[in-house]
Image (cartoon, rainbow, N blue to C red):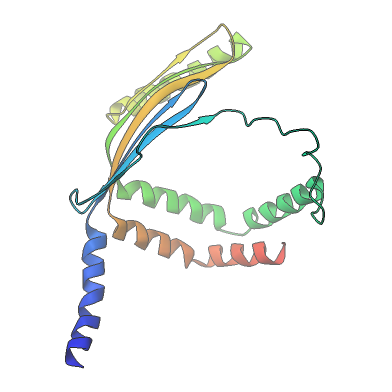
Length: 204
């Protein structure tokens, strides 16, 4: 019995120690005709090393449905009614007092827990109207100067000949699961999140 009690006392300590070891995540993304992504996760100082075996490509547009497959399935609510119900639920949640402020707190807290090792991107963009492209690019120039001060290698290039969005990027971050878990638990236990959950449930 004493060994069982010792094991029950030591087990939580082992879990805490393991969660305190940083996890490293590296993602490489390329967007041309489709989206190609490669990722790798390392933990326990490299003892756990999980990665995508090959690049996963996803087309930008889903293939069209065959004829006769566009009708709603029997017994389902029409798409318009489902969309209206979904909109009602989203609005009910967003109108919860203090929720947006709490979400902003969550995002800031999560960013503080992340240590950026690498962040680089090359993005080419353009709109049908060259004036819109120039306006957006003028807005992004101060942002590019700001991220350069953070040591991030982000660059975007305007394309004035037509609508386009393509490029590639790499990001590598290191984060401690224990710190993230504490932030998430604090967020979920906050009164605004509970009120938002109640609003979601009652407006379904």
